[in-house]
Image (cartoon, rainbow, N blue to C red):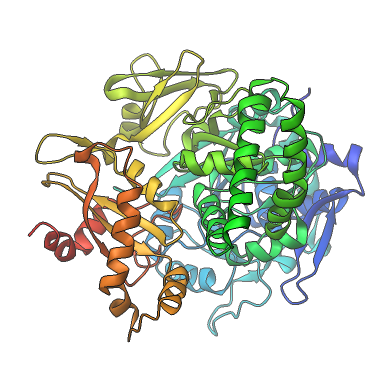
Length: 602
């Protein structure tokens, strides 16, 4: 297969797809989905590329994108590549200090902003910035401040009437001069500690990523519909979207993460990237409904899941033909039970649902596979242009993150650290030579910072971030993420943070699923004046203790949570407990909740 540089990949698709649908965009007012053809997609990229050149963007200049998921994010990215410049995406949830740091380090003069909040934050930065001069507003509903005389709306920025022959000529020249080594992205890792680092990704990194996925996912047909759900700042969504474009698929762009349940039912995507929390919610929701069914229906459902497990994992996954009676039983359950569940969610057309970004409970993974949803679990980092390993179509092993990708090498180094080598691995961090040097071994392997193992079949298992491993005062090592992943499968638990570094035993801060908690209180006639009152109710505490104890059977005694506190308020990005990728900030949490934590050790 011929591989095109990112700067030309959409334009090449025009020759074979033209009037076919490339993007689906949901109208903010009517809520109806509108189509963008490959022809239109290509034209928008060209107009944006000409506008960037007209503004003064030249080779290896940095251009920022501070926005939710918009079709314009794709126009901007590919237009920046056309100028041989560098796209720098920022999470829509990023704070003023976070975007200030990125703008200053990249010396960025032009920033595209998504909605009102991003515009307001960017204006604060612009007033005091040595570098930021121009804001381009994607959302037409953004209200500009009274003294803003420089910002321009996106549609005006790419006005066709402003295009000159000089711009067209220069962009054509840059497209022809594109090289493997051109830097196309600087993607900042949110990080749970320390200042963010800008990961440098080149044309070569992405071309390698496209190739290894072509090999591993060879069984997928061309032209399916994929929902763009995770933030496009996230390398997982970014690389997957580029792969879908490479395959000529249609991308349905979900702008607001809170609307995903609604948009999934409207689009019914055949593919969608997600993080484990999405599937934890699905699992908890299904289990919650089953718990309320009469005994006969509950038994029937459990038998269906067990049948699906045997058919899909014991036979199909091992490329063995299931017995005739099992095949018939599975078809019955798939049609009348599993398909109803999938339709309720919007996943009945599933071809592939990649999942990565954090640890996924084996129990949840098995459940999803059993009800016949094609979940492909994997592992990767920004520094590896996403995927290091993932499940193949068959022959995958639950408990691992799948086989290491073709043309990627992995090994286990000191402290059980997973180390990686391949063409998809970054060359380093932007303007941070010392950090770059520390990230690689003397013989050129990238240090992932994750502890794990490598099986004889070249499958990776991930235990924990090495920096997150802690030791109790009794000298026992604890992997908190394993505990947290186990608890996250419970329908009453939204998030958990395991505590225990240099402590006598393990404790936890529990954020409940408040909707489920209130339902339980109503069902059992528990009265309360506030959420704090409810979280401290002795009946609720007893419920959580029973459920937490039952989920810890596979852990050694010293690993088990001995005490916990139920918090009346959720962790969030805004309040500081979570990163932009929804990972727990352990140091921040231990500092913020120090008094509560200390009380569990009195």
